[in-house]
Image 1: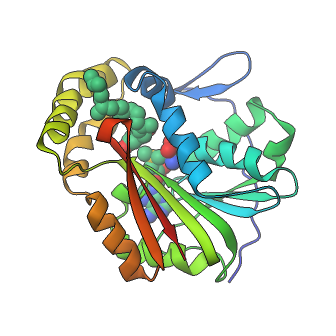
Image 2: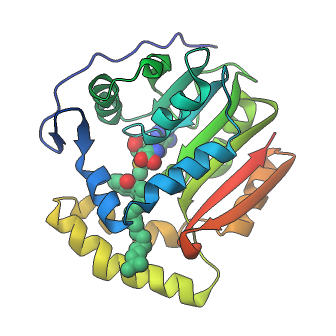
Image 3: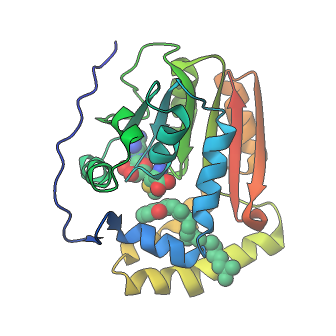
Length: 243
Ligand SMILES: C/C(=C\Cc1cc(O)c2ccccc2c1O)CCC[C@H](C)CCC[C@H](C)CCCC(C)C
Ligand SMILES: C[S@@+](CC[C@H](N)C(=O)[O-])C[C@H]1O[C@@H](n2cnc3c(N)ncnc32)[C@H](O)[C@@H]1O
């Protein structure tokens, strides 16, 4: 079953989002800039680059949230290509649509925002040339099912690129990450009014999968190859899986 994507109507951002002359900037994005010293933008660029998305491709950004990766994919595939940003939160998609309007670039016309569940993707088999997931898989309740869905909608030979916090096997890195979340991330998030959003990070990372486990997950879902790479000194990780 294929769903004809309907773009969400735009809205003026208020509440958790602030505006400047050209853009609606979610507070979480501003906070991520501060916390990561801007590095999260680099990690997202790497994730998109490793998806091997290219001009003219039809690509999926799953768990797109406010659309950071979708905007990067849009520039990669150009006006001949197509980007679908999928999330199950209508509120996140409205923010993404608002950013699309306010940070207007010609190529952004190629992005559609679609409300949908990673566990039951509204696309036919072998529909996409590439899939990205940024900070989404960790939060999905049934990861094996999500990986099988990603595999199903990818064309043979195409790639999924999955960026998230790294559940490090190194005691030093895991301790630094845990310390930083308690002493830097959560206190700073509180000052942005985002305590709840970030408080769960530590437990969600500990319930996530190590790089090795992610590779196993992808292979068990049916991917022909899967490799996990550490980024940001081991604090982040990116899984690249080829159908
Ligand atoms: C872009 C980043 C995270 C995405 C992200 C993940 C989530 O789970 C969220 C949940 C709710 C709302 C928003 C998000 C969200 O945007 C990563 C950038 C920020 C990181 C928190 C950076 C933290 C890195 C280290 C743990 C801290 C290192 C500091 C140390 C002193 C070197
Ligand atoms: C932390 S945000 C990441 C947003 C964006 N990818 C980024 O990197 O900034 C995670 C997103 O995953 C979405 N999400 C979680 N589980 C999902 C599911 N089963 N299906 C679709 N979206 C989901 C949430 O609504 C949220 O917007």
